[in-house]
Length: 488
Image (cartoon, rainbow, N blue to C red; front, side, top):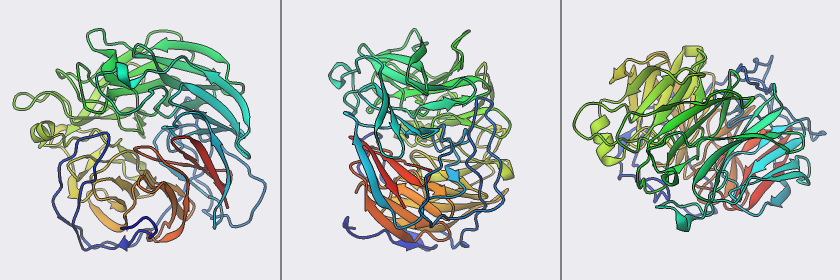
């Protein structure tokens, strides 16, 4: 499909899936899958209230509207990846259409994570380890903070980002007024920083290189930071190429910087990275869920890799775990679950997860080990972050080069619509879906009910796993050079 055409929307039918050349993760060629017919999407909406260290979800609004009038922008708080600790990617209303480019700002290096919105300040962190507070209305710089010299790729055992600085999406905590991010600096050091969100002043920092027998230069912090229950949680995976002695792990530190940093590491010889861009996810039950990649075990006893793990937020104690019965083959062929974070469907007390094999699993909130999924469905080699609206999960299917709508029941899964020739992590605002396309660098606006294209507008060259922020009548797209802002 040429770049000038819009994605096709497909309902049901057979889809032949092909795997594009992914710069970050090795993928095997998938087989054709028969996708069943489904009903159109019916959505319920939630509000855009700010989240705090308590991890509480915003309350539901009285109605969902799609703004068409141009008014003075009123910003909410976009405090974390996909807005809420559950990574819902859903806000009650968005800008009108058509969108127009409002402003763009070059920040010197790539912005891999989502920017945050705090008051009327847009906070963006770059691979050059520079953090900017921008006026969200016009892109003017309000403050700028440096976090040290970034790590050059030439001094790492493998990888594909150069330089390597702040890669994961930061998180804001309303209780302390701090914004948290992890910076990688020269020598492969990974440091958690707390900045004053108002002026960018550095408050405290803490090393997260907590595994003494691993090579910190082989670890990478790509995942989004999570703030919940007064804790800052950060997960780690490996570099592109999965080289050297690393293992997936997640840390928990107080939002004040006091006390001990607790951690959970996958008990495998190496790999099992926790690298998915949405990072750790807060469950309805207050526990934290992380997905891990392929581990070292290929034939023997299960090593708890290729899994979704439920952890306590403070001490990182494991409470339950799911892994597919194909875990050995997944480990052998790099077809694991680590490429997507769990999608929470709280109304049903269910979790959806998919990965590189192309199988989507429906899980209980408390799983019971290998093969304990409620049901599964083929059709999505998922990478990065989903969006959840009521009982519908919008899936980022890199292998299919599609965004797909999945209808979830207590014991069932079925596809409704597919937007073809389009990949990115979707965000829902009112009756629209926003997707920054990885291949073209265009921002697509889709109808929520059926996935048809409303508008397409160029944003710039985007990152491996692109996403966007919708707030205050704007859409903010991070790019390899900075931020592009659109307004209706």
